[in-house]
Amino acid sequence: MIVLRLVIIMVAMLLLGVAAVLVLIRMAKGPSTLDRVVAADVMLAVVIAGLGLEAALNRHGTTVPVILVLSLLGFASALSMARFVADRDKAKKWDVPTHFAAGVPDRGGSRGGQERADGLGTANGGDTADGPAPTGEVPR
Amino acid sequence: MNWGLIADVTGALLLLLGALLCFAAAVGLLRFPDVLSRMHAATKPQTLGLLLLVVGVALEVRQPRVLGLLFLVAVLQLFTAPVSAHMVSRTAYRTQQLDEDSLIADELADDLARAGFRRVDRAGDPAGDPAGDLAGDLAGELAGDPAGDHAGADVGRSKPRD
Image 1 (cartoon, rainbow over the protein chains, first blue to last red):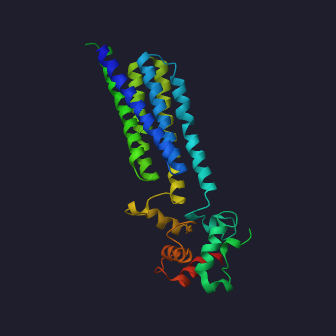
Image 2: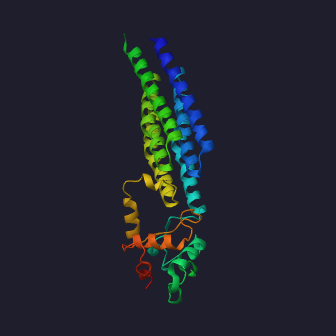
Image 3: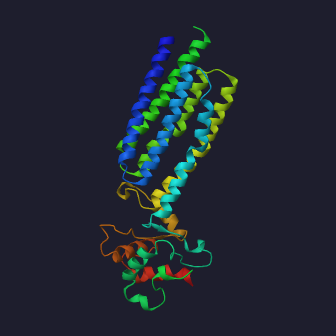
């Protein structure tokens, strides 16, 4: 029975090692930043699992506070990276809603204005004379 | 066969299951096509895998102090994992980093359009070379007008301005 327990935990550790290598491959390849963020999240889960396995194997609780801190703060990295990508990426699919922009109907001079001015300028065609003139250029 | 041995083997099996979930997540992360489907694989070890692991460790290390800490770990992970997953998927959707052909329904698009969001063409998209037609079509689609009706789309779009 003791041997069975040892073998099972060793197999679990082996699986975790392979998983870590696969996650590293994705982190290196990942075409976008968000792929790498997701891979980092999984890597964190693998690290937590490894610490737990070590605590279980040696029957001590020394690493449990470390697991606690990792699970408490692990989400902060993904969250801040997600916000960073959202701010940095000018290629936006969805623009801010008009009524969220504090009185100014079409905000956008600050973010992604360049693409919008280009795209809508051609889309409006002859319309540019009357009013809606490139919404990206409305001053805030 | 005493209870200690049963707890040992059961705990080891639970640990193995948790590690198996981590491995499956890694394989999914490597093989799935886009960010959202990769997240589908990636969020399994963060919740279920960690819960299995915590129960396994609790069965192996039978100390009350460790039990309390492990309970805290489980609760905190259950609270924080959805937050980061939500933010990452939201950013992925808004920056168009998803495979739209793999979507069956895009209900979020309707809701966003109703909430006043407006679809913006992705700059540097090889498909949308004239960039004007595509943007007009998308805006028309979202405003509920027949696609391609640029004048109607523009009226619908400039309405909230007044």
